[in-house]
Length: 196
Image (cartoon, rainbow, N blue to C red; front, side, top):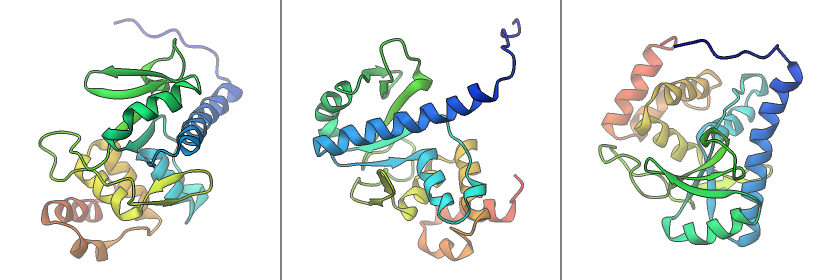
């Protein structure tokens, strides 16, 4: 496998890549708001919003825009987001809205369906869109819903997000009694191994 063609380092390019994700998030959520479609931002952007409430310097950039929607609202969401230039695709079992016809899956808003398991083997379904609260410019999942969803998914990036929340004190050992045993065990493991 050959090495990729690398472009020279550009601070402007780096900043612009972060700005594009934020712009995508705001365009998508504004379109859903205008259409009156219940939703909640989840994933890395929700983690960033929660962490920023405690320590802006601890916020980690994310490349994903993840939106929690009810399956019954998907058709209305398609109309709302397509009016903003997004293009709906269902690829490898994932519903997403590409940011334009030539965009890649990385340049998309990914849909997570509310109150459904993402994978059959998941311990719990996702939260409902009502389990959310307003942030500055959009609705985001509640902290408890976010923590549960991250503990259910428990991929490397989810563990990193959970560690970020532990690091700033959003969650701690007092949460162990609030969680089902399997999720509490995962959180305990993260608490006991803060460096991975």
